[in-house]
Image 1 (spheres, rainbow, N blue to C red):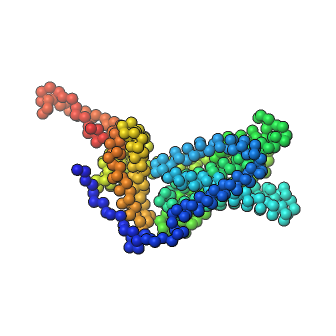
Image 2: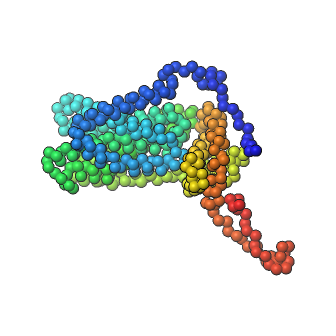
Length: 439
Protein backbone atom coordinates (compact mmCIF):
# COMPACT_ATOMS: atom_id res chain seq x y z
CA UNK A 1 0.00 0.00 0.00
CA UNK A 2 1.34 3.44 -0.93
CA UNK A 3 2.38 5.68 1.91
CA UNK A 4 3.45 9.28 1.99
CA UNK A 5 4.89 11.73 4.51
CA UNK A 6 2.51 12.89 7.22
CA UNK A 7 0.13 15.47 5.87
CA UNK A 8 -1.24 18.00 8.37
CA UNK A 9 -4.94 18.64 8.27
CA UNK A 10 -6.29 21.88 6.87
CA UNK A 11 -6.85 24.62 9.45
CA UNK A 12 -10.34 24.63 10.91
CA UNK A 13 -12.89 27.10 9.73
CA UNK A 14 -14.31 29.76 11.96
CA UNK A 15 -12.59 32.36 14.15
CA UNK A 16 -9.99 29.89 15.47
CA UNK A 17 -8.80 29.04 11.98
CA UNK A 18 -8.79 32.54 10.62
CA UNK A 19 -11.82 32.04 8.36
CA UNK A 20 -15.16 33.76 8.84
CA UNK A 21 -18.01 31.44 9.74
CA UNK A 22 -20.69 34.00 8.98
CA UNK A 23 -19.38 36.35 6.28
CA UNK A 24 -21.28 39.51 5.48
CA UNK A 25 -23.21 39.43 2.23
CA UNK A 26 -20.77 41.76 0.47
CA UNK A 27 -17.87 39.46 1.38
CA UNK A 28 -19.31 36.48 -0.45
CA UNK A 29 -17.57 35.52 -3.66
CA UNK A 30 -20.83 35.11 -5.54
CA UNK A 31 -21.85 38.69 -4.71
CA UNK A 32 -18.49 40.14 -5.72
CA UNK A 33 -18.33 38.11 -8.92
CA UNK A 34 -21.88 39.10 -9.77
CA UNK A 35 -21.17 42.79 -9.17
CA UNK A 36 -18.00 42.67 -11.26
CA UNK A 37 -19.69 40.80 -14.10
CA UNK A 38 -22.57 43.27 -14.07
CA UNK A 39 -20.16 46.21 -14.16
CA UNK A 40 -18.24 44.79 -17.12
CA UNK A 41 -21.44 43.86 -18.97
CA UNK A 42 -22.90 47.35 -18.55
CA UNK A 43 -19.59 48.89 -19.64
CA UNK A 44 -19.60 46.65 -22.69
CA UNK A 45 -23.12 47.66 -23.67
CA UNK A 46 -22.35 51.36 -23.27
CA UNK A 47 -19.08 51.17 -25.21
CA UNK A 48 -20.84 49.18 -27.93
CA UNK A 49 -23.47 51.89 -28.28
CA UNK A 50 -20.88 54.68 -28.31
CA UNK A 51 -18.66 53.03 -30.93
CA UNK A 52 -21.62 52.11 -33.11
CA UNK A 53 -22.91 55.69 -32.90
CA UNK A 54 -19.58 57.05 -34.14
CA UNK A 55 -18.93 54.47 -36.85
CA UNK A 56 -22.38 53.37 -37.97
CA UNK A 57 -23.50 49.77 -38.14
CA UNK A 58 -21.59 48.91 -41.31
CA UNK A 59 -18.45 50.65 -40.13
CA UNK A 60 -18.71 48.89 -36.78
CA UNK A 61 -18.91 45.47 -38.43
CA UNK A 62 -15.95 46.22 -40.71
CA UNK A 63 -13.92 47.53 -37.79
CA UNK A 64 -14.82 44.51 -35.68
CA UNK A 65 -13.76 42.07 -38.40
CA UNK A 66 -10.40 43.78 -38.92
CA UNK A 67 -9.66 44.58 -35.27
CA UNK A 68 -10.09 40.99 -34.12
CA UNK A 69 -7.32 39.67 -36.38
CA UNK A 70 -4.30 40.36 -34.09
CA UNK A 71 -6.10 39.38 -30.87
CA UNK A 72 -5.58 35.57 -31.05
CA UNK A 73 -1.89 36.05 -31.89
CA UNK A 74 -1.30 38.42 -28.98
CA UNK A 75 -3.21 36.24 -26.50
CA UNK A 76 -1.28 33.17 -27.69
CA UNK A 77 2.02 35.03 -27.29
CA UNK A 78 1.24 36.07 -23.72
CA UNK A 79 -0.03 32.60 -22.89
CA UNK A 80 3.24 31.16 -24.24
CA UNK A 81 5.20 33.43 -21.91
CA UNK A 82 3.09 32.15 -19.01
CA UNK A 83 3.70 28.45 -19.67
CA UNK A 84 6.04 27.86 -16.71
CA UNK A 85 3.35 28.66 -14.14
CA UNK A 86 0.19 29.32 -16.17
CA UNK A 87 -2.33 31.52 -14.45
CA UNK A 88 -6.03 30.69 -14.46
CA UNK A 89 -8.03 31.63 -17.55
CA UNK A 90 -10.54 33.55 -15.44
CA UNK A 91 -7.87 36.16 -14.70
CA UNK A 92 -7.08 36.60 -18.38
CA UNK A 93 -10.76 36.77 -19.26
CA UNK A 94 -11.31 39.46 -16.64
CA UNK A 95 -8.29 41.45 -17.85
CA UNK A 96 -9.35 41.32 -21.49
CA UNK A 97 -12.93 42.27 -20.62
CA UNK A 98 -11.74 45.12 -18.41
CA UNK A 99 -9.51 46.49 -21.15
CA UNK A 100 -12.12 46.13 -23.90
CA UNK A 101 -15.09 47.42 -21.88
CA UNK A 102 -14.34 49.33 -18.67
CA UNK A 103 -10.97 50.88 -19.60
CA UNK A 104 -12.15 51.77 -23.11
CA UNK A 105 -15.30 53.40 -21.73
CA UNK A 106 -13.31 55.43 -19.19
CA UNK A 107 -10.90 56.53 -21.93
CA UNK A 108 -13.60 57.60 -24.39
CA UNK A 109 -15.58 59.57 -21.82
CA UNK A 110 -12.60 61.17 -20.07
CA UNK A 111 -10.68 62.00 -23.26
CA UNK A 112 -13.73 63.57 -24.90
CA UNK A 113 -14.57 65.63 -21.83
CA UNK A 114 -11.00 66.84 -21.34
CA UNK A 115 -10.50 67.73 -25.01
CA UNK A 116 -13.76 69.70 -25.14
CA UNK A 117 -12.91 71.52 -21.93
CA UNK A 118 -9.47 72.51 -23.24
CA UNK A 119 -10.95 73.63 -26.57
CA UNK A 120 -13.51 75.77 -24.77
CA UNK A 121 -10.96 77.23 -22.38
CA UNK A 122 -8.35 78.04 -25.03
CA UNK A 123 -10.67 78.66 -28.02
CA UNK A 124 -8.21 76.60 -30.08
CA UNK A 125 -9.67 73.20 -31.08
CA UNK A 126 -6.53 72.18 -33.01
CA UNK A 127 -4.24 72.66 -30.02
CA UNK A 128 -6.81 70.96 -27.80
CA UNK A 129 -6.74 67.84 -29.99
CA UNK A 130 -2.93 67.75 -29.92
CA UNK A 131 -2.79 68.26 -26.16
CA UNK A 132 -5.49 65.67 -25.63
CA UNK A 133 -3.63 63.05 -27.68
CA UNK A 134 -0.16 63.65 -26.22
CA UNK A 135 -0.97 64.45 -22.58
CA UNK A 136 -4.53 63.59 -21.58
CA UNK A 137 -4.91 60.29 -23.45
CA UNK A 138 -1.72 58.65 -22.11
CA UNK A 139 -2.59 59.55 -18.52
CA UNK A 140 -6.22 58.45 -18.74
CA UNK A 141 -5.72 55.29 -20.79
CA UNK A 142 -2.72 53.93 -18.92
CA UNK A 143 -4.39 54.61 -15.57
CA UNK A 144 -7.56 52.84 -16.71
CA UNK A 145 -5.61 49.81 -17.89
CA UNK A 146 -3.43 49.78 -14.76
CA UNK A 147 -6.59 49.45 -12.66
CA UNK A 148 -7.03 45.85 -13.88
CA UNK A 149 -3.43 44.99 -12.97
CA UNK A 150 -3.95 46.53 -9.53
CA UNK A 151 -7.15 44.55 -8.94
CA UNK A 152 -5.50 41.23 -9.80
CA UNK A 153 -2.49 42.17 -7.68
CA UNK A 154 -4.70 42.91 -4.67
CA UNK A 155 -7.40 40.23 -4.94
CA UNK A 156 -5.63 37.39 -6.79
CA UNK A 157 -2.31 37.62 -4.98
CA UNK A 158 -1.59 33.91 -5.23
CA UNK A 159 -1.73 34.15 -9.03
CA UNK A 160 0.55 37.22 -9.12
CA UNK A 161 4.01 36.06 -8.10
CA UNK A 162 6.52 37.81 -10.34
CA UNK A 163 7.45 39.76 -13.43
CA UNK A 164 6.05 37.30 -15.96
CA UNK A 165 2.64 37.40 -14.27
CA UNK A 166 2.70 41.19 -14.40
CA UNK A 167 3.63 41.17 -18.08
CA UNK A 168 0.88 38.69 -19.00
CA UNK A 169 -1.87 40.40 -17.00
CA UNK A 170 -0.94 43.87 -18.27
CA UNK A 171 -0.49 42.68 -21.84
CA UNK A 172 -3.85 40.93 -22.01
CA UNK A 173 -5.57 43.99 -20.54
CA UNK A 174 -3.96 46.23 -23.13
CA UNK A 175 -4.86 43.78 -25.90
CA UNK A 176 -8.53 44.13 -24.95
CA UNK A 177 -8.23 47.91 -24.90
CA UNK A 178 -6.51 48.02 -28.29
CA UNK A 179 -9.21 45.72 -29.70
CA UNK A 180 -11.98 48.21 -28.88
CA UNK A 181 -9.91 51.19 -29.94
CA UNK A 182 -9.11 49.56 -33.27
CA UNK A 183 -12.81 48.97 -33.92
CA UNK A 184 -13.40 52.69 -33.43
CA UNK A 185 -10.51 53.83 -35.63
CA UNK A 186 -11.07 51.31 -38.40
CA UNK A 187 -14.83 51.84 -38.40
CA UNK A 188 -14.35 55.61 -38.61
CA UNK A 189 -11.84 55.20 -41.43
CA UNK A 190 -14.32 53.02 -43.32
CA UNK A 191 -16.99 55.69 -42.91
CA UNK A 192 -14.61 58.28 -44.34
CA UNK A 193 -13.92 56.07 -47.35
CA UNK A 194 -17.65 55.68 -47.90
CA UNK A 195 -17.98 59.46 -48.14
CA UNK A 196 -14.95 60.01 -50.38
CA UNK A 197 -15.35 56.89 -52.51
CA UNK A 198 -11.78 55.67 -51.87
CA UNK A 199 -11.14 51.97 -52.34
CA UNK A 200 -8.28 49.49 -52.12
CA UNK A 201 -4.76 50.28 -50.97
CA UNK A 202 -5.25 54.03 -51.34
CA UNK A 203 -8.15 54.05 -48.86
CA UNK A 204 -8.00 55.42 -45.33
CA UNK A 205 -9.15 52.04 -44.04
CA UNK A 206 -6.16 50.27 -45.61
CA UNK A 207 -3.73 52.86 -44.22
CA UNK A 208 -5.26 52.63 -40.74
CA UNK A 209 -5.18 48.84 -40.85
CA UNK A 210 -1.51 48.86 -41.90
CA UNK A 211 -0.43 51.25 -39.14
CA UNK A 212 -2.49 49.87 -36.26
CA UNK A 213 -2.82 46.14 -37.02
CA UNK A 214 0.24 45.29 -39.12
CA UNK A 215 2.96 47.63 -37.86
CA UNK A 216 1.99 48.25 -34.24
CA UNK A 217 -0.39 45.64 -32.82
CA UNK A 218 1.93 45.47 -29.80
CA UNK A 219 1.87 49.23 -29.07
CA UNK A 220 -0.71 49.29 -26.29
CA UNK A 221 0.54 46.02 -24.74
CA UNK A 222 4.08 47.40 -24.80
CA UNK A 223 3.09 50.53 -22.87
CA UNK A 224 1.05 48.72 -20.22
CA UNK A 225 3.62 45.95 -19.81
CA UNK A 226 5.86 48.55 -18.17
CA UNK A 227 3.20 48.95 -15.48
CA UNK A 228 2.94 45.17 -15.19
CA UNK A 229 6.70 44.84 -14.68
CA UNK A 230 6.46 47.37 -11.85
CA UNK A 231 3.77 45.32 -10.14
CA UNK A 232 5.77 42.15 -10.79
CA UNK A 233 8.81 43.60 -9.00
CA UNK A 234 6.53 44.65 -6.16
CA UNK A 235 5.23 41.07 -5.94
CA UNK A 236 8.80 39.84 -5.51
CA UNK A 237 9.47 42.33 -2.70
CA UNK A 238 8.99 41.46 0.96
CA UNK A 239 6.02 42.86 2.81
CA UNK A 240 8.30 45.00 4.96
CA UNK A 241 9.44 46.95 1.88
CA UNK A 242 6.24 48.97 1.75
CA UNK A 243 7.76 51.99 0.03
CA UNK A 244 9.24 49.86 -2.76
CA UNK A 245 5.95 48.07 -3.28
CA UNK A 246 4.31 51.44 -3.92
CA UNK A 247 7.01 53.36 -5.79
CA UNK A 248 8.03 50.65 -8.28
CA UNK A 249 4.52 50.12 -9.75
CA UNK A 250 4.03 53.90 -9.82
CA UNK A 251 7.33 54.28 -11.69
CA UNK A 252 6.24 51.65 -14.20
CA UNK A 253 2.96 53.50 -14.72
CA UNK A 254 4.79 56.79 -15.31
CA UNK A 255 7.10 55.11 -17.83
CA UNK A 256 4.07 53.67 -19.63
CA UNK A 257 2.49 57.11 -19.79
CA UNK A 258 5.73 58.64 -21.09
CA UNK A 259 6.20 56.10 -23.85
CA UNK A 260 2.53 56.38 -24.79
CA UNK A 261 2.88 60.17 -25.00
CA UNK A 262 5.93 59.90 -27.27
CA UNK A 263 4.08 57.45 -29.52
CA UNK A 264 0.98 59.64 -29.77
CA UNK A 265 3.08 62.73 -30.36
CA UNK A 266 5.04 61.17 -33.23
CA UNK A 267 2.67 62.73 -35.76
CA UNK A 268 3.75 66.19 -34.62
CA UNK A 269 7.43 65.49 -35.27
CA UNK A 270 7.19 66.03 -39.01
CA UNK A 271 6.48 63.91 -42.05
CA UNK A 272 8.64 61.01 -40.91
CA UNK A 273 8.08 61.44 -37.18
CA UNK A 274 6.04 58.25 -36.89
CA UNK A 275 8.73 56.11 -38.53
CA UNK A 276 11.48 57.78 -36.49
CA UNK A 277 9.72 57.05 -33.19
CA UNK A 278 8.87 53.55 -34.37
CA UNK A 279 12.50 52.75 -35.23
CA UNK A 280 14.19 54.62 -32.38
CA UNK A 281 11.85 53.73 -29.50
CA UNK A 282 9.24 51.10 -30.23
CA UNK A 283 11.34 48.39 -31.88
CA UNK A 284 14.26 48.55 -29.38
CA UNK A 285 11.85 48.67 -26.42
CA UNK A 286 9.92 45.70 -27.78
CA UNK A 287 13.13 43.72 -28.25
CA UNK A 288 14.44 44.60 -24.79
CA UNK A 289 11.22 43.66 -23.05
CA UNK A 290 10.97 40.42 -25.01
CA UNK A 291 14.50 39.50 -23.90
CA UNK A 292 13.68 40.42 -20.30
CA UNK A 293 10.58 38.25 -20.20
CA UNK A 294 12.30 35.24 -21.80
CA UNK A 295 15.27 35.61 -19.43
CA UNK A 296 12.87 35.79 -16.49
CA UNK A 297 11.13 32.64 -17.67
CA UNK A 298 14.45 30.78 -17.82
CA UNK A 299 15.21 31.97 -14.31
CA UNK A 300 11.87 30.59 -13.17
CA UNK A 301 12.78 27.18 -14.59
CA UNK A 302 16.09 27.36 -12.74
CA UNK A 303 14.19 28.10 -9.53
CA UNK A 304 12.09 24.97 -10.08
CA UNK A 305 15.23 22.90 -10.58
CA UNK A 306 16.85 24.26 -7.42
CA UNK A 307 13.89 24.22 -5.01
CA UNK A 308 12.06 20.97 -5.75
CA UNK A 309 14.84 18.50 -4.79
CA UNK A 310 14.10 19.29 -1.13
CA UNK A 311 10.64 17.78 -1.58
CA UNK A 312 12.13 14.80 -3.41
CA UNK A 313 14.38 14.13 -0.41
CA UNK A 314 11.33 14.33 1.87
CA UNK A 315 9.48 11.78 -0.26
CA UNK A 316 6.87 14.01 -1.85
CA UNK A 317 8.47 13.81 -5.31
CA UNK A 318 10.53 11.20 -7.09
CA UNK A 319 14.22 11.98 -7.75
CA UNK A 320 13.58 12.45 -11.48
CA UNK A 321 10.73 14.94 -11.13
CA UNK A 322 12.74 18.11 -10.39
CA UNK A 323 14.70 17.53 -13.59
CA UNK A 324 11.60 16.92 -15.69
CA UNK A 325 9.64 19.83 -14.20
CA UNK A 326 12.46 22.28 -14.92
CA UNK A 327 12.38 21.54 -18.66
CA UNK A 328 9.59 22.78 -20.92
CA UNK A 329 10.39 19.99 -23.39
CA UNK A 330 10.12 17.33 -20.67
CA UNK A 331 6.81 18.80 -19.50
CA UNK A 332 5.41 18.61 -23.01
CA UNK A 333 6.59 15.01 -23.41
CA UNK A 334 4.95 14.08 -20.11
CA UNK A 335 1.60 15.51 -21.18
CA UNK A 336 1.82 13.77 -24.54
CA UNK A 337 2.69 10.48 -22.85
CA UNK A 338 -0.29 10.77 -20.50
CA UNK A 339 -2.65 11.67 -23.35
CA UNK A 340 -1.43 8.77 -25.46
CA UNK A 341 -1.78 6.18 -22.71
CA UNK A 342 -4.71 7.43 -20.64
CA UNK A 343 -6.53 10.11 -22.61
CA UNK A 344 -7.09 13.83 -22.24
CA UNK A 345 -8.17 13.76 -18.57
CA UNK A 346 -4.79 12.27 -17.69
CA UNK A 347 -2.96 14.88 -19.75
CA UNK A 348 -4.95 17.59 -17.96
CA UNK A 349 -4.01 16.07 -14.60
CA UNK A 350 -0.32 16.08 -15.58
CA UNK A 351 -0.56 19.73 -16.64
CA UNK A 352 -2.15 20.58 -13.27
CA UNK A 353 0.56 18.61 -11.48
CA UNK A 354 3.23 20.61 -13.31
CA UNK A 355 1.53 23.91 -12.42
CA UNK A 356 1.15 23.00 -8.74
CA UNK A 357 4.76 21.81 -8.51
CA UNK A 358 5.96 25.08 -10.04
CA UNK A 359 3.88 27.09 -7.59
CA UNK A 360 5.37 25.01 -4.78
CA UNK A 361 8.91 25.79 -5.98
CA UNK A 362 8.17 29.51 -6.17
CA UNK A 363 6.56 29.44 -2.73
CA UNK A 364 9.62 27.78 -1.20
CA UNK A 365 11.90 30.23 -2.99
CA UNK A 366 10.01 33.18 -1.52
CA UNK A 367 10.06 31.54 1.89
CA UNK A 368 13.82 31.07 1.87
CA UNK A 369 14.26 34.74 0.94
CA UNK A 370 11.89 35.97 3.63
CA UNK A 371 9.21 37.11 1.18
CA UNK A 372 6.52 34.54 1.97
CA UNK A 373 3.27 35.64 3.52
CA UNK A 374 1.74 34.53 6.79
CA UNK A 375 -0.12 31.72 5.02
CA UNK A 376 3.08 30.01 3.84
CA UNK A 377 2.48 26.77 5.76
CA UNK A 378 -1.17 26.55 4.76
CA UNK A 379 -0.38 27.22 1.11
CA UNK A 380 2.44 24.64 1.11
CA UNK A 381 0.06 22.03 2.53
CA UNK A 382 -2.54 22.81 -0.10
CA UNK A 383 -0.04 22.45 -2.94
CA UNK A 384 1.40 19.21 -1.58
CA UNK A 385 -2.12 17.84 -1.23
CA UNK A 386 -2.89 18.69 -4.88
CA UNK A 387 0.34 17.00 -6.01
CA UNK A 388 -0.33 13.85 -4.01
CA UNK A 389 -3.85 13.58 -5.38
CA UNK A 390 -2.45 13.41 -8.94
CA UNK A 391 0.70 11.41 -8.33
CA UNK A 392 -0.55 8.11 -9.79
CA UNK A 393 -1.10 9.72 -13.20
CA UNK A 394 1.72 12.27 -13.24
CA UNK A 395 4.66 10.27 -11.91
CA UNK A 396 4.86 7.67 -14.71
CA UNK A 397 4.56 10.41 -17.33
CA UNK A 398 7.23 12.59 -15.74
CA UNK A 399 9.52 9.61 -15.22
CA UNK A 400 9.18 8.76 -18.91
CA UNK A 401 9.89 12.40 -19.84
CA UNK A 402 12.96 12.47 -17.59
CA UNK A 403 14.40 9.35 -19.22
CA UNK A 404 13.63 10.68 -22.69
CA UNK A 405 15.24 14.09 -22.18
CA UNK A 406 18.15 13.07 -19.94
CA UNK A 407 21.49 13.98 -21.54
CA UNK A 408 23.54 10.99 -22.66
CA UNK A 409 26.33 10.00 -20.30
CA UNK A 410 29.59 9.25 -22.15
CA UNK A 411 31.25 5.90 -21.56
CA UNK A 412 34.77 6.41 -20.18
CA UNK A 413 37.19 3.54 -20.77
CA UNK A 414 39.55 2.50 -18.00
CA UNK A 415 43.13 3.86 -18.31
CA UNK A 416 44.54 0.31 -18.23
CA UNK A 417 43.50 -2.93 -19.99
CA UNK A 418 40.93 -5.05 -18.17
CA UNK A 419 40.98 -8.82 -18.59
CA UNK A 420 38.18 -11.07 -17.55
CA UNK A 421 35.88 -10.47 -14.67
CA UNK A 422 38.70 -10.16 -12.15
CA UNK A 423 41.27 -8.54 -14.39
CA UNK A 424 42.76 -11.68 -15.96
CA UNK A 425 42.08 -13.71 -19.05
CA UNK A 426 40.07 -12.35 -22.01
CA UNK A 427 39.38 -8.59 -22.17
CA UNK A 428 35.85 -7.56 -21.22
CA UNK A 429 33.77 -4.63 -22.44
CA UNK A 430 33.94 -1.46 -20.33
CA UNK A 431 31.11 -1.10 -17.82
CA UNK A 432 28.71 1.70 -18.80
CA UNK A 433 28.47 4.75 -16.58
CA UNK A 434 25.49 4.95 -14.26
CA UNK A 435 22.60 7.13 -15.41
CA UNK A 436 19.93 7.72 -12.75
CA UNK A 437 17.26 8.32 -15.40
CA UNK A 438 17.74 4.98 -17.20
CA UNK A 439 16.01 1.81 -16.10
